Length: 485
Ligand SMILES: Nc1ncnc2c1ncn2[C@@H]1O[C@H](COP(=O)(O)OP(=O)(O)OP(=O)(O)O)[C@@H](O)[C@H]1O
Ligand SMILES: [Mg+2]
Image (cartoon, rainbow, N blue to C red; front, side, top):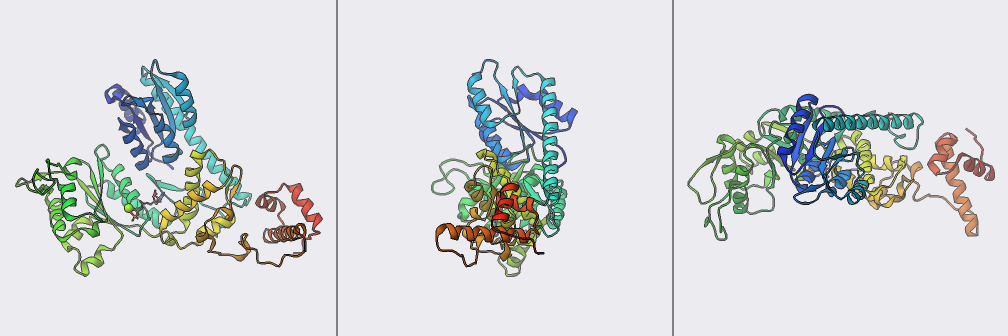
């Protein structure tokens, strides 16, 4: 993954870091994001693709080490640097830093040159370990290990791309993200359509963080399941007394986000009256709070998302055509996961890494069988469904194991793309009377089946069955198995 590196500064006082910020941006060309509270910092790690986090030990007078710990889940590849107070509690800091697996300490007072150097080195280390991961994967693939070995073209792509938090490798997503990156550079409204769980919100956030509005807020409002009056008051604001319960003036999100981006989710759900108000905002930048005669101006970029096709709603007379045309300055349609199956393997790997990171469990990877099943699932819930399945499997797997069909949910097990791969319901008559004989009969069958399928490549078979090569050779001898092909 290439491009400008993003550094997140989770710091109490921005002035104290002004020199660091300008040195990083000017000399090294990094993108620098700033958060002054733990909550804001965590939100940024969930929304933007962060390469390095510099976090002060205390924010708002409280320990902020949970930010670094949480980063292990929200941005597992980001390097983590802790800034210690001059007279901080070293023992406590060390323990917490251990849990957060930080890369380095920096101690106050801040030495700008030292920070620049540490950041540079940390990012070099990150790049080296990224390359190492890629090479290891390549080697594993050449060795035709169980992981990814069953991809139709025999290998997974050497690298995957990302647009902030969106991970992809498929052609349709590459094309879409290229358009989205271009759209981000303009100020036009953007309409993102696609089925549930395809990544529409992630796309909206990526666009905001790649626009020139990054330094201003991104505000998200879901337009579904909320009354018209409430929605109006949330977004456009209201004056005290505008309706029963309006006990004080409210600014409204559009004005609060002035200079930034407002993401309106489930835009298909807004009422005809709200459509008129929104049209006025998009056309003229005008905001009229409920109960006010005054019209305010604000400069926000609107990004909308919808599961329903707005064009169809327009033709049925359910959505204003003029508003639809205004909203789709750019129209991005995120394809369902079943139409971009190339993304499944990289997403599965990405989510496995994400969920193993926190638990400290070292997994060997995803078995062939599981990957095959993942690739054939219909995914009505799209990427969200894949993510949930991986999260569940990682939770069930133990240290040193591959994720296998044993860890899969019933729903995914129901998909059996290739009966030869079905290791859950072996459809065979088990010979023998005693338990020992039955177990041996089953074992013989499984070893024979794996040998046949993997063309007697004993190192592959041993790996797949979790045996040593000697262990496998003993079983071949014991069951008098022979290569007849
Ligand atoms: N390409 C991707 N790379 C990494 N994670 C993804 C990708 N696409 C989706 N996800 C993850 O899948 C989940 C659903 O994504 P998101 O909320 O953006 O979907 P959505 O289209 O807005 O869904 P809905 O229509 O239900 O609101 C999130 O956890 C998100 O992080
Ligand atoms: Mg959404």
